[in-house]
Image (cartoon, rainbow, N blue to C red):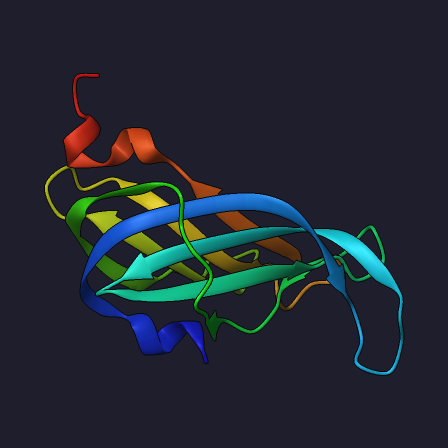
Length: 136
């Protein structure tokens, strides 16, 4: 699934981040520890896994729908999902989930600098930007 397919208004109700041991290739038994983010949008759980590439470059692998449990659940919060803007120095393939009450980014998932020799995976979770956490 492509990140741009999630653009629009949604209800975000859970986010987990972790480092997991992931099998890198179907044809190999090699594994590597990778950053993972799972999030629940409109009752559907999505999972994104960092592909560490070679230690200097990384990217966000394909977004998948999964049945894995989320431990950090909260009442559904309305978020607007939009693709991160490109700038004069980089082309980005990152989706941003913005709390509609606070106007702040609560979750970013994707790859920045896709047109550069050193692209990098983006998986930023900022629960403090959710409206339910305002003033805490």
